[in-house]
Length: 303
Image (cartoon, rainbow, N blue to C red; front, side):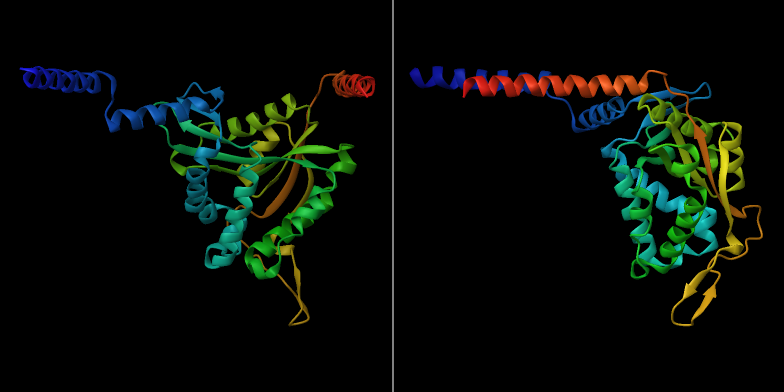
């Protein structure tokens, strides 16, 4: 009799456990949907557009998707990349991707997605530049890391050196846009403009006095002008030359493009900051100093 009672109890327990699992556990499909939703919610929504798009912060869990999006479309369409046949230089492609990954890790980049979808259809890669960064970082790319990317970075370095943003604008830092891309099926809908505006607003919230970019196409240059960007310097692709040590002569690495994209333009937008923004920074520093002094006094008293 004792055995039958044990069996009945065991069967009841199994039945109870099964009901518990049915009631409290979700299917793998539902779990994936919840994870997908949480990822989407985790990103900060910077703008909801009236035509069904939204601009969100580009979080770490979407870096791989963003890189694949850039690899598939940017290197194929971007004027500088096509003028020098970047895709034919595998080493340059790898170096470019590493550079983009490094910029993404600074967490100042944004992407565009369509309402109801969770797929990236636009991206803007940006970072904060401080005085001295340009000279150090732009010259780090060596020729053995890819001839194409070496020439591209040399061109960018040339135009930014001509622009002299720190000296001309009298600033010690700026918000820099490195890359802007919108999928061809979603263009002419204001997404590119919205992405740039997002960077401008971000710079303003961080009390950064300027937003600067090297715009490589007529469309992006026109877009920037409409937003108030001014030209600091411009280099025509056909005029840019580099010295070939082996041949002991100058070469023109960029083909004279037959389309409308003819130059790389360094353009800047000065951002109006609160009058007391420097005072805020000073007060924050003084508060920290006072806190440190109090801590030191307490330590000395204990001794």
